[in-house]
Length: 221
Image 1 (cartoon, rainbow, N blue to C red):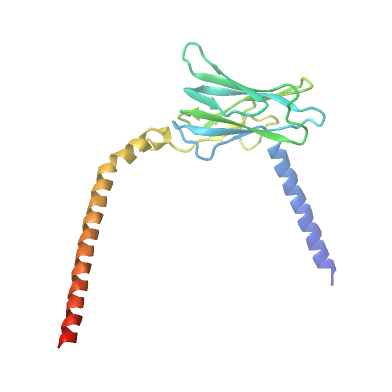
Image 2 (image 1 turned 90 degrees about the vertical axis):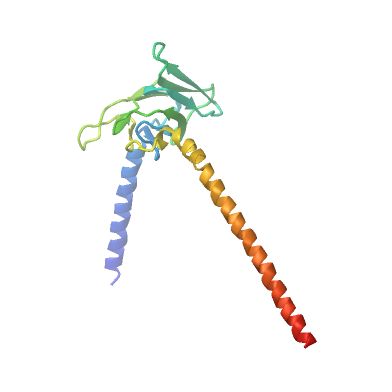
């Protein structure tokens, strides 16, 4: 009677182990995430960098950018960031994070590197080829493009972009203007609400006075 539950538990354990293993393999890749990223818009890109080596730590990361007008790094204790720009166009072409002496992303660990960037290309997907450097001198290039359903051994971090916003919010400039443009309507609505509130107070006071007069008159009679 106990054979079926035991087999069920064993099967579930094997399935969970396989799923965990698959997730571990996928997470071992250098990747980029930005849930709100849209074509032509600005976003905060998060590059997730795991250390695959069992004996050395990650000490540097260089990411190639698709010629961006703006690229700003977030300060990170123990790391120095530098953005490289094209002298002719002034567009950001790459960014490099370098660990200070004695600092590294050790074996079994990962680090997130944040970059505020834009406007993003007007295309469905954008790749950010990356180069990961280890403390023992090993250099790993994550620059292979994915073709079809089969993922390459060292895929380039790739981001899927949402369609550009028609109202311009994706560019981070029109939203403020739209809010300011509604100031007059909001003020008018607020004035109307105050006027109606004042009328209500007057009517309430009048009703209270009439009620009090009725009570006094009743007592005199």
